[in-house]
Amino acid sequence: MVFQDYALFPHLSVRENIAFGIRKLSGNSQRSRVLEMLELVGLSAEAEKYPHELSGGQQQRVALARALAPKPDLLLLDEPFSNLDIALRERLSAEVGNFLRSQGISGLLVTHNQNEAFAMADVIGVMNQARLEQWDTAYNLYHRPKNQYVADFVGEGVLIAGVVTSEDEVETQIGTLKGRFSYPCRNGCPASVLIRPEDIVYDDESPLKAKILRKDFRGANILYTLELKGNERLLALVSSHHDHGIGQQIGIRSKVDEIILFERTS
Image 1 (cartoon, one colour):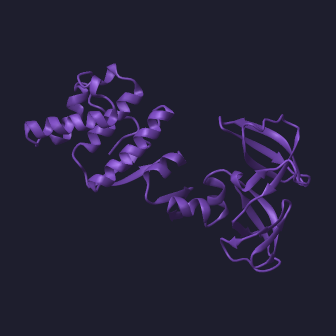
Image 2 (cartoon, rainbow, N blue to C red):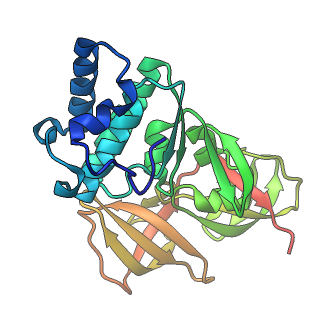
Image 3 (cartoon, rainbow, N blue to C red):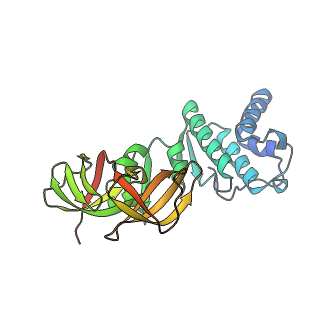
């Protein structure tokens, strides 16, 4: 198990902490395994240091290496990357996921970070107040959420009101959306339609206008929070070359292939 609070042995060096669970191996095998783990977590230069001489992120990596060293059948991870910087977190989550698969080790990871779960997991469970809402692949959680909680929780997006007008069309404030429904909904059904930022396309020529309420600069893109005339809100991921101010109106159009909707009850 990889504990969130590390649980390292303070009187043992990094090398000795990692070797703790593999002391039955021969000397050469033990040294080889420890070196492999040190390389995996990027701590070769700290092998002879003690836990109190390491940063929190380094201690967490030692705990990870110690748990992986015995090649367990099942590895339990309690938010193992929470104290790492973003770049290291992304690298380690991908590498640990690949390592577990290559070694045939099953892993159970608890995390609040969706990107971390997507990078590591073959199957993901979304929990809500101790209830398992959906147990599925990352693709299905994103593109075929089973209920509004999962739709709202996974990724970015908003739910807007609509009315189903045929088996593949729904009328909304951003126009008539036509495509395959993720779940069947009868004609005339009042619906909540999930619109992702990538479903909204910036278009100066479009007659549909939206007011910018907020902008989040993300380097190559800007995530705009937009408001339509009927007070519906949308998110749009737009190239950062189109830099507009809060309060401005921009032209948008929808580009939705698979329509994720849920029947609106009340």
